[in-house]
Length: 224
Image (cartoon, rainbow, N blue to C red; front, side, top):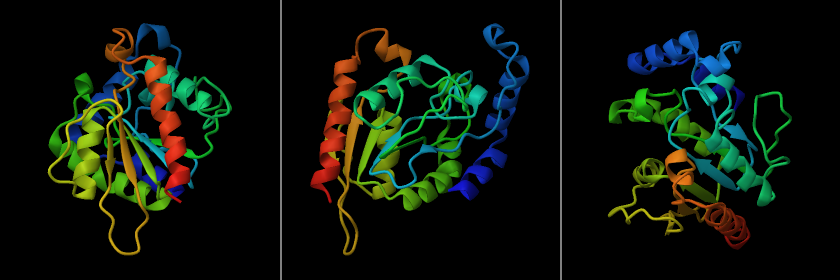
């Protein structure tokens, strides 16, 4: 996993993403003018033997692109890690920077696209170029339950597992992954993304997020 992390951080395969992440890191937001931005690809974070893998979209420009750790340093991360903490998957409810002592047990957090994209919208080509990194994280962690934060993550997982036709995305929707001989049983659970667009409007509440993580934890026992 450490080798994957180094390769992700050093990756320069998508010119548009490289230009944007480095521009953001150079210009910075006024509130973080004193920060030394990470400005590179952001690998997954958490327990490398986790049964629950949480998959988002991409690093936030002034969150993970600043701190170097997924969902760290922004309000989306505040929501996510509070939820993981309440579910017993994190040792603390906050994620401020890479030295804040946060540890995950039984959970791994990652994204299909490893660099912050302009307007938070990666292109299909960028997603496909980044896929080998997610593939390797998936193989190394080998999770039983995959929590898809948002439709982008859900589409990527359905593509990864060859799920056709793709079920309609919705909060709390569960999709069993087709199992081949010798493979473990897996389930995808959908959740609205923890973006401010959803949390500020009440489309996603903490109770809704808690229900997804509680179900994910329960499923890990059922799938063993």
